[in-house]
Amino acid sequence: MTLPERPKNVFDGFVKPIRRLVEEKGFKTPTETQEKAIPKILEGKNVLLISPTATGKTESAVLPVLDMLLRTPERRRGIKILYVTPLKALNRDMLERLEWWCNNLDIKLAVRHGDTDTKERTRQARSPPDMLITTPETMQAILPGKPAVPGAGEAAVGNRQGLSAHRVVSHNWQSTKGCPVSSRVRT
Image (cartoon, rainbow, N blue to C red; front, top):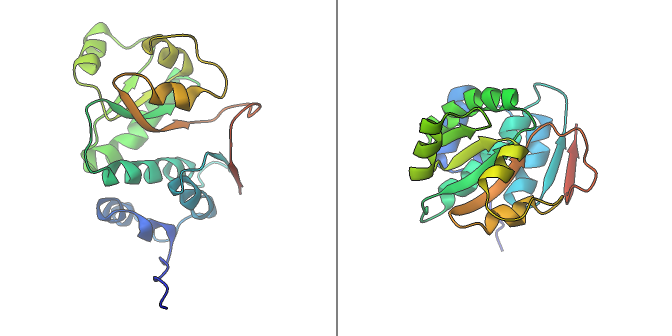
């Protein structure tokens, strides 16, 4: 019996459009964080990334989720990925970082927080992005129903009408108490 050839690195397992962009970005070799986290995320595990600045945490978390989205045969209308940050200022930073990836992959990206103007809110309601960057407070405000309870974010988001989230990606939380994590990646 011949075993399938194992990819040289974790980037090789992505769909062709992402592999092309990884190469265009100049990522020749994955960082230790990417090497450890990407396979676990692709397996569908909840992962907590703990790693110093500039070690590829954002790409470690987002690229596998974008890969899963691109592999979805039929994309329904609505938000499929939520990227939750604790601060509005971090929303803007993430928007700038993720725009390049999403624009090149034809994935509609938007940001939503308390200061989002009415015109943009209306636009998002009429034509929801594929990926939304938001804060916990804004996420709770835009989702109908009871207030979010710790550990229920992914289930609550996945069951709301109009939302078919592949993953909820959270960023830079100060505490991991009560966080349902099946894998921790520390580098």
